[in-house]
Image (cartoon, rainbow, N blue to C red; front, side, top):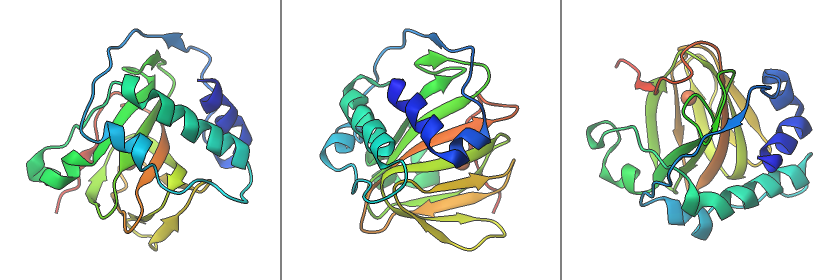
Length: 193
Ligand SMILES: [Fe+2]
């Protein structure tokens, strides 16, 4: 939590997206393991190098790796939506939010992990979103925008209900994702074809 807060303060795009919540309380949530959780420790993706806020990015990446065995990991997509391999090498958990390890009604902050060579299909959600990259790399797509390859320290915003997608190539990716607005407890939905 300290690493997340320091990260939030150190990256201007993150601090500008939303203030750090002032209503955070500890919620006692059981760990839930999924196949991808050990991969966060064994293959987190390349770490930040020579970037602004490198120390804070690396510190949060290390903290996430350390707590991977204790997180309440979720999948929330079906095999029909994303495929069997995706569900073996993807996962996310809610650090802060309406149903997070720390409760807040003001924000939702999740950690997401994707192994190499995964195609995260087009999806969307009501809250606005800011992706930040802790380690590794992926190509991010959003309707109406150019494809962007993100690396540690990069950020990318998605608007309310703006369809977006992502492809990992040779690297995995570990992300810290912020949501703001209404519907923080909702799960993303696949975008209509
Ligand atoms: Fe999203």
